[in-house]
Amino acid sequence: YQLALDKYNRESDGLYKRYSLLSTQENQDYGRHQDSLNQYQRSWENAFRLYQAGVKTPEVLGILGIPEETGSGAPSAPKKKLFGISLTDKVNSGEYTPQQAVAEAEKNKKSSDPRIAKNPNYFYFYK
Image (cartoon, rainbow, N blue to C red):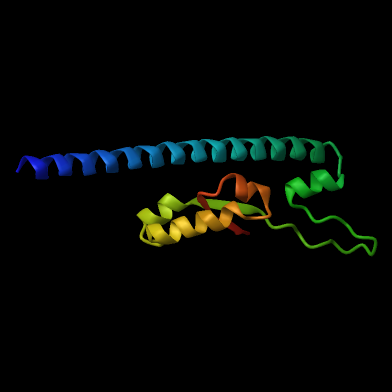
C-alpha cells in the first residue's frame, strides 16, 4: 500500500509542477499579449488624433486601417489586422486537443511574422 501511495504522490506532484509551469508560461504570454494590445491601442489613439488634425501620411492611414489614395484616385486595398486567441482557451472549449495546441504553438514559433513567433501560444487569424 505504501509503495502505491508514494507512486501516486510522486505522479501528482509531477503533474502539479507541470501545470504550474504551464500556468506561469500562459500568464507571461498573456501579459505580453496585453502589453502588445495596449501599445496598439495607444498607437491607434495617437494616429487618430493626428488624422483629426489633418495629418494623412501612409503611416497614420495604415494604423487606422484607412486605405491610401493611389495615383489613380482609387483607394488601395485595406490591410488586414492580426488577432489572437489563447490556445489554452481553444483546448478548454474543446475546439483543440492538447496535441493540436502544441502543434499550433510549434508552427507559430517558426512563423516569419515576428509578432506570431514572439507569442506562439495563440491561435492567430487575420481579419
